[in-house]
Image (tube, rainbow, N blue to C red):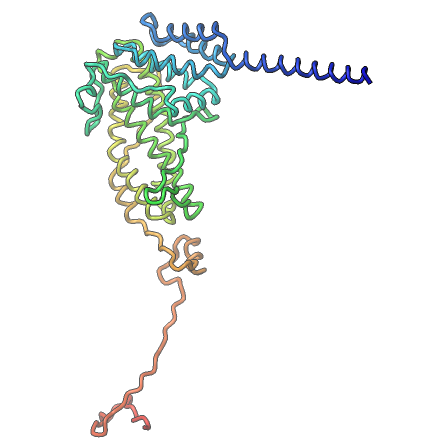
Length: 393
């Protein structure tokens, strides 16, 4: 009996020792090594310091390698970059910090990208540029003007690049290596706090997804167009690197825009069955494209004349004309269904046949019989073949 109890206590002791060792390893893994944190901070210093030219990818890959050894330190990395950005007093220093965020966002895998975007959403990572005395935002002047603004000066370029990164954080790189917007949850109604009802049909859902993608492309392209640096800003190596990345990403955004534009707006049958709010959104997107595409074409021409990334293959911009927007307004509106009744089979068959003719449906005529009573002193018209007899009383 004593031997049996001794074996039990020995097994319990062995189990406690094993549990204690596992918990010690877990706690040591949860707390990153101080040497690792120091290496990450030193790498951030090399990327954002005054000695960095802003175009060396070696330090970026070094940071990604250090973070891959301890995935939990990405929060420490984000906070260190944010601290250096907030402490920057010169536009060049702030620009190097923003450029590091942009390079990490592009060079990391999709899990690193997802974590970085999550830290941006939680405000552990911030990409809003500090306000300096030379910034137009410090004086209460908006960076964006009514027309196609051009960044003038280092401070304006930094704030424009910061605004671009804020929008870029809402995009992801898909498996094909192309940019696509990350779908955001629909905003709640202001009345009851509940999300809006889902689309009435799968066709509406597909159209809503494509219209969301088109709107996001237009926003990103707007920010890219307004980021064209002047001659003084182009002398900065970090500014050239940042603008080169923005220019290449604008090509991807425009390719996605033209693809969606062909699928949704320029094919009339794609809009024939969607709901009225989506048709209004489609019209606004096409109306904006009439003003944006000429600006985008001129923007690419300016980049070519300034020899900005002359080795790139610029896309051929197709200017959207107001006639295409007017043509979309002439499309037939869908007939709303009332009292929960479904559409008639004849109407569905007509829609499936591409519209059919105007009198393709069978029409019926109902003839009613009317009784007419005459007074006693009324006389019938002689010779009238269609005279009516007086009804019996």
